[in-house]
Length: 280
Image (tube, rainbow, N blue to C red; front, side):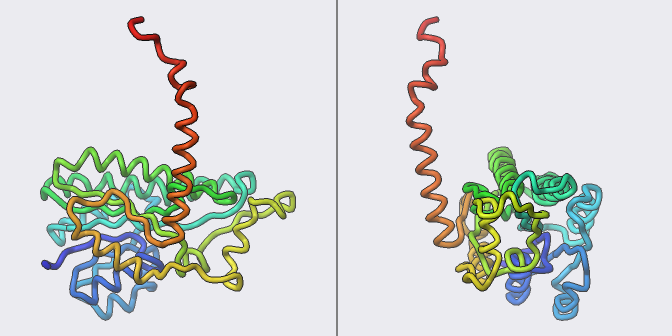
C-alpha cells in the first residue's frame, strides 16, 4: 500500500490525536490542525519531516482557506481530508446561552462545511481523494439534553451526503463516520455543560450527568480501535457513505431507524390524501 498524505483538524486530543499518532507511526504524512501548538509539541519533535502542524480555529473561515491553500501548495497532493474538530455541549435547550449556541454551530457545523468547501477545488484538480467527516451516531439518534449537538451533527450529515453525490464523478469519495461513546477527552473532560436550572432536575434533560461521570461506568468504545477502522476505510472502494463504530451505537441506530420507518409507513394514506387525483 502506498503512503498517503492526510489533513486532519483537531489533532490535539480524542480521535484526531489517535489518527495522527497511528498514521505517523506507520510513516505517512499528516497535516494536523490545533488551536495550541504546545498540545502537539511531542509530534513536532518526533516526526519533524512527516508532521506539519498548523494553527487553526475552525470558526475562522478565512483561516481555514489560508491553511488549506498553504498545505496543498507545500505538499502537492493531499489524499485524505478528515474533518474532526468539534466538541460536545449538554443541557436543555432553554438552558443554553446564545453564545453557546452560536459557538457550537460555528465549530461543529459551519467549520466542517467551510473546510469541505475549501478542499473541494484541490481534490477536483488532482482528480481524486477522500473526505471523511467525523459525525456521531447522534447524527441519526437524538437524546434529551443534547439538542444543539444533535442539530450540528444532523446538519453536517445532510450537507456531507449531498456533497458526496455532487463530487463522485470527480473521483472524490466521501464517508460519514458515526462513532458511539468512546473513552476520550470529548466525553470525559472537554464536554461543555450549560448553566443548569433546578426545574429540569429529575427529567430526561439532565440524564446526561450520569453518563459524564466515569464512576457510573466507562464508555465501551476504544478510540484506538475506532481510529484504526477509520484509517482502514480509506482502502475501501467505493467509499462507504456511513460507518458506525461501536456495537451500542449500531444497535441504537438500527432501533431508532426501524421505529422511524414504521412511523412513516403508518402515514401512507395521509401522505397520498394530499396528492392531486390521477388525471386531474
